[in-house]
Length: 347
Figure (cartoon, rainbow, N blue to C red):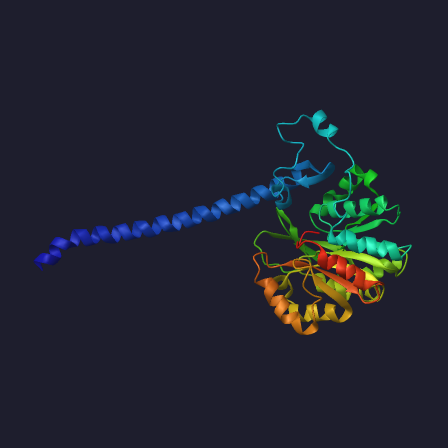
């Protein structure tokens, strides 16, 4: 009894200390949650208002300042930088010396089609801010061709694509369509994450910051029927895991001599179908190369599951693959060119 009485005040203080510690921990958690909410609200309020003009190799591109793509180009000259005034910045704008695709895997594929066909279709499905499509147009122009590049993006970055195209008319013809592209035509719901337009997509609504809006959707086949009919084509597909749906809607087009560059992200695909099954579908229709390891391949049907697992285990969890339909002429020569180039996942 005597010992307990002496310890009672200390035990009481210990209980009070534990209670205070729990309250502090609770308040810390609440403050962190509130900070995140304020940050998300700030991005929602300011995102559409803050637009910058960014120079990529002399090509002006309009971008949202709060976007990941903008943050990943810290060294690119920007009009809002304090080190430039408007006049000196605009004086830097000029047509690039060459397309960034020249000598790349993309350039090799497009050049191969141009050498064999008098009329090809060039599609950029998921064009983001439009720089990739504009450099495709510039490649065509430098080859003396007049086919337009058809660019599609229903996401946030797509709001600025038409402006960037207008600012770069000298680089060639790009026709922009604010559509989603999938396996059917009509209206659909499109999701986007504020500040991460590279993650705009047709589904996988999992992020707390996700916004959604209705957009028109078409298929590659329907678009081709409405714009010159089925013909040889180069198609770049980057739709945040919804590439299988784009392929499903392009069965007639893929029966033509077609080369596609497809972003393969197993984690984003597996919520709807097996990534290995998707690769098997491509391998059955096309010759498939991994752009990360151009010297390896083509991928065989029996390697599909192992390939999908290997890509998912990489640090980036995705890669770009090149799919060459079996009706493309002179395939062996193109394969040798692609397999002999330096290893890279950059187009």
